[in-house]
Image (cartoon, rainbow, N blue to C red; front, side, top):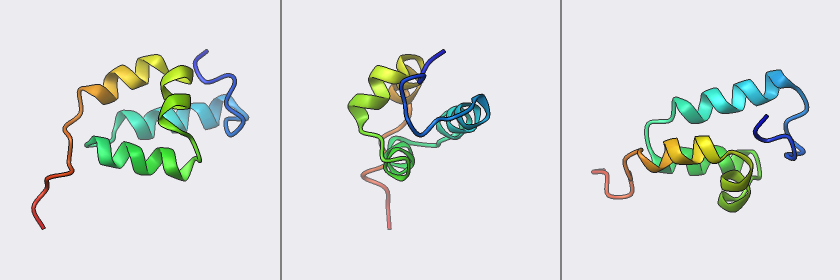
Length: 67
């Protein structure tokens, strides 16, 4: 199972919730905020969750959004 080595995911319920939040993110900035909330670096995310990382690559980059 992906993410087994991540200390913050103690149960399959935690893992499922994390995966759902990432999968429903609307953009890369939102994913970065989620990772920050879990104290997870992009490198650790990519290593621990390669399939989710591929999904995130297809998300739009929101850095140029209008204010």
